[in-house]
Image 1 (cartoon, rainbow, N blue to C red):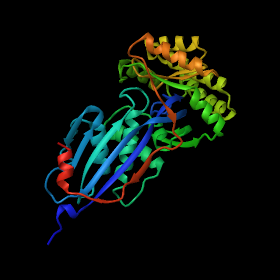
Image 2: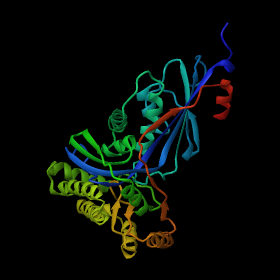
Image 3: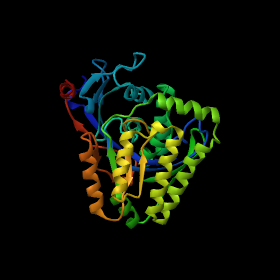
Image 4: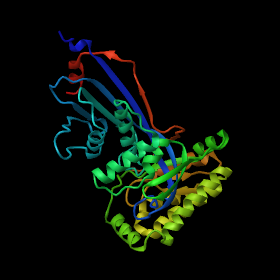
Length: 365
């Protein structure tokens, strides 16, 4: 006689992955750049994933997805071709697969705003892959998780996607990335003493412009131009140089030099296309400069919406006054609290619990 469902063991797997800011050298981690150098910083807030797994006996959906930020809960049928409501989540689950004798409910949540240009989608994918990997006998390394996450976006979904966001989420910390041949790269974590780490964390601010960033005709135009000029385009070289300067500045604990590298990178972004630095971004930069900020970086590829990383000066009260003025200037502008994330992807598991499957189903309704 088979056991009742109430006797079945339920596994609860948790994972978390940081987002990234201050991606100096961005645009050079792409297929059209060929090779690149990127400096970025992994920070909280995390993308969080929880997978509840239990034996499946052939009845009902095998995969339930709860996209908590969107208030959506639905059954995803892996056997059906194509994608339904959230292609990135569904493509990751399809790629990783689910053991044939297992049913899962996947819950995804992030406090980082969607479209903030901070690699949130990459963090979600990395966290989801890490959690699903726990269901299999093998274990992917952080580098393998990042590579799988990037392949899902480019190969499964056909999107334009660099490699640095996934690496930042998988590795955590502050990283200097050398892409020697797309998409292959080496990752060098930048190790600094606690005083420099703490001071960097204290000086940084992340400002969300209140509008989701999305790919646009501007980005497509930039990509076409860069593709035509090839990997040795001086505009790409300027971005690569900014990453090198950022690395060297942080190793030296020289925040003024780091700020100059951030500014240099943002100016180089604007040279790719002036519309990559929006009017709202320029307004925030003006306020930051007036309050003694040392540097500013338009996160991600730039354009309308998104966010900026600001590197403030030595006086904490100046930073607080700057944030107050930024938030009072436009009701859409707001600071997102951040903390440096020493770790990248984290995956752990609760002790097995015995639970009736109906309880899982009821929670999904």
